[in-house]
Length: 112
Image (tube, rainbow, N blue to C red; front, side, top):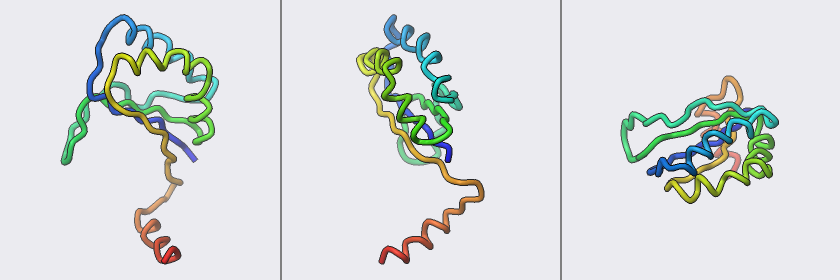
């Protein structure tokens, strides 16, 4: 099942370190079949609060996403982002084709 690395960067200091991070991140993705789906787009917030740019990288599954994040190549550049931005990043599983939100609710009955 597809998985995603998602980041919301509330602020970014566009300095030489961030430029280096952006120049080097592309090369970290192919070994894990990762690809940018969204990069630095400012969201059109419809409700709530989601300040700053959003980044979404797709992977074939959560194992590939976690292996990419923990890879020596990505870990070597991660401090460049962490030192120069404020925000957060997560890895999340996608849902299978044909998924319906009602399926989640139906599954709740089995837990009670």
